[in-house]
Length: 157
Image 1 (spheres, one colour):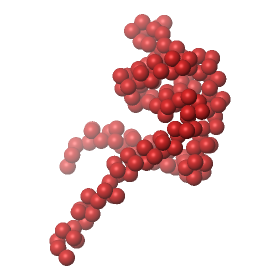
Image 2 (cartoon, one colour):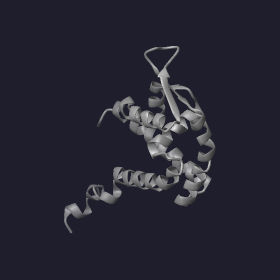
Image 3 (cartoon, one colour):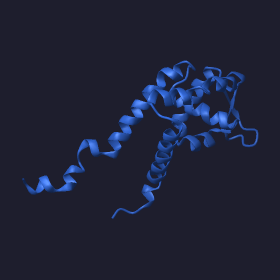
Image 4 (cartoon, helix red, strand yellow):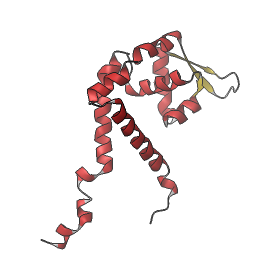
């Protein structure tokens, strides 16, 4: 046995121990599991997230949506155009600020919410989670997002 074999930092470089690997694979896997469920709503996963934000509060300025979804406006704009083409949202200049674009739900977009009510329960069943374990996992992920968001503010040692 060499010194490298007993050095625990070498084990830290195993792929299976990488937080980024686990998160990346989990993200792709969960989004893939959503795909057939959201297809019934004619939505992609990113479009579903936009709709969720709008079902919480509409109309919203693009900047507000961008902040809520942690997406750049350049990423959000094509999503909004596609949702508008589907007839779920409208985009217009804000009455209070001509520089801002306001996004609102159409009647069809608002009505889609009733169909989407089944998505969370369907997804918990598909992933083998009960509500408590799903919420615990969500809290952990939100804490991780918060830590990663503020990681740039912490100086390296």
